[in-house]
Image 1 (cartoon, rainbow, N blue to C red):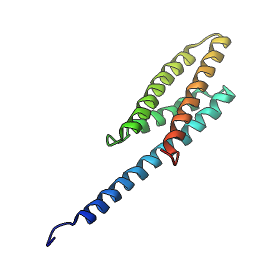
Image 2 (cartoon, rainbow, N blue to C red; image 1 turned 45 degrees about the vertical axis):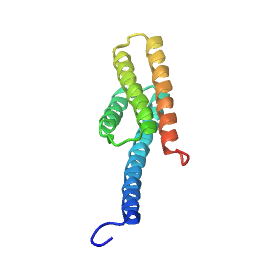
Image 3 (tube, one colour; image 1 turned 180 degrees about the horizontal axis):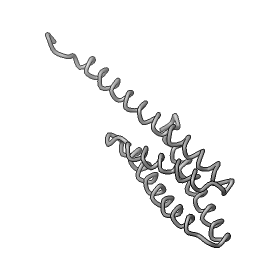
Image 4 (tube, rainbow, N blue to C red; image 1 turned 30 degrees about the vertical axis):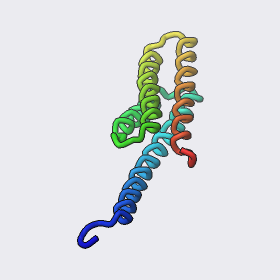
Length: 130
């Protein structure tokens, strides 16, 4: 083909573009995974609600930056991640307003379970088999 792109070069360009997008998403989920691990460490100690909230707000903000060009499978996981973040937000609000130690403990446990789910989702997305 004179002056035009060959099919082979067009496919190579599309693959490179897809690889760059995949690497961008990989970095995004690695960042989220790392921040969730920090939240888990705080939740285990059950002490620093302010620090938990500070990191959690960063995770929420980072989650809103996700690319719209996600594949269908990735989008399903992202939807679940967003759902768990919304529920964590509610749990955090209830934790901050809890007066009884048993209620606070219950909220920490629930938040720990949600954080575990977020780790599972991120690990699945970061898996080489994905």
